[in-house]
Structure formats: C-alpha cells, structure tokens
Image (tube, helix red, strand yellow):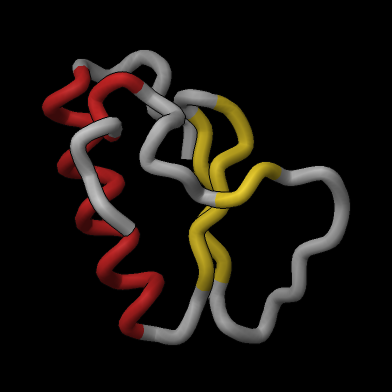
Length: 66
C-alpha cells in the first residue's frame, strides 16, 4: 500500500485499519519505505532486504507503539 500521497491523518487511519485486519488474520506488516507498507496474509513468507515494521518510519507513525 503506497500511502505517500495521503495526509498524515489519512495514512494513519489506513495503516491502523489494515494492520488490525492483517494481525487478526495472522498476517504480517512490513515497512518498505517511509510511506509504503506491505500487508501479507499468514500463508505468505517474505524474504529479502525488507525493513521491519517500525514506529520510527513515517513521521505520523512515530508516536505509535508496536
């Protein structure tokens, strides 16, 4: 999900919603860049140099705790 064009408030809402749905289904959330996230179901394994989901990534996400 590319959230780079959204306002910080809208991006936070989208990430909150999709994170909840992803975690509820046993999936994972990965940060690709500051504004791009990868939401995967539990049956998908990721490999490579992806960054872990981190609250320090985008400025609007800095106050969140994981």
